[in-house]
Length: 493
Image 1 (cartoon, one colour):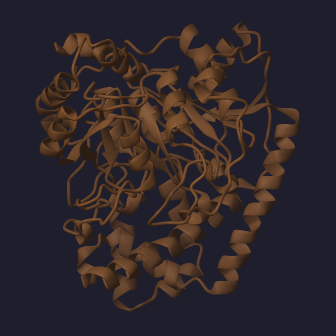
Image 2 (tube, helix red, strand yellow):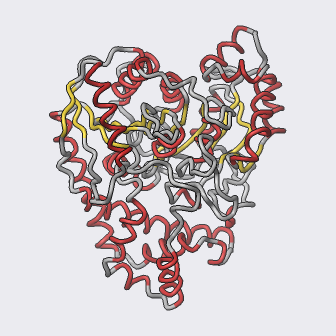
Image 3 (cartoon, helix red, strand yellow):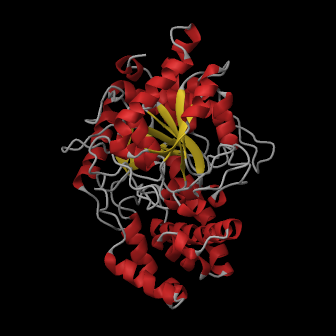
């Protein structure tokens, strides 16, 4: 199949060509591999090619909603049996996984042909994709810039036209951030809707969930139909939706009341272009008949950021300790930033951690009160346009302080000073809007309605009430029809 024809279709369209007999899965796969070989040397999106496995699979009889469609999975929590899940860390580069993750099994059951795993920062801990072990991934819209993270490899591959959709996961914005950076649609589902097993009951107390990055809303809707739902071994019985998500995405959203905010919830600076992206969306929404007004959530989002980082650091400590025990590797197998996060996590005592986690309930209640008045919350997805590769690296002063604290085992001092707030400002100032949906377990999406004067995408975020994936998808379809983005191609294309 010629690439230009391949690029014209989303995943549903490609599956239709296979179903009608117009094209074979092997032809689609070879087109995708050829495209990857052409552009990935400039992007570094795929860190673990699986061409032989995929070619054998493409020869078999495939069935399901996406039968025969080439696909990539993220090299974090999306285990493929027999292959390592590297998680962006040299510590796990050679540890094969014994079984598929449940979400991967569901993708395979849907007929997708997985031919590679995509790049991610170490343990998915950053909003950029620049791991030391695999090197940085670059944005197809401008390779001097980041595609975001932590699903940055998947986002770069979709934006560059290697695949129409790719796997991601989102524990603090890791689907929405790269979607915003790369001109894609990205939906983070509600807590518990998509299973995390079998290696995990839930990740980050359910704040982290699996999903996809796509170029069309309908692909994300059908992908959610494929992966959502009860796992007998999981901790939740998700509530039933009003119908298939693909059907819900086609419905008219009706007249919505939407509250919007552009100020940073943690008090950091916001780029005029991020404000312009929201103002542009507000104007478009009003043209479509929606009621839109400035509003505040009532959530203490400065405290929410602290609570998010308390959980994040403690989880990093547990992850590092688990990997060391499982592999026998030393501390030197982890990046400096990972080691300092883990050290701070170890210095957090149990009562402090439990109090922090208990506040998640308070944040959720306050956001629920907001949603009694407004159907959706609209914010920038990013406070600034996509950063240059290396721009968000740990500052020299912080790296030096971290090394000193690790040397003297002084992370406990760090946990007791205002340096944690300074770390929060430094690390979350670019992405201060996305953690709210993770902590509260609400669905949220980034929609690519805006490009900067410099030609970089800069998406806007919508946050819904619990279980409102159908409403979000319906609005996204309306926005997609009013402001089409599918055929916009990055310069690398």
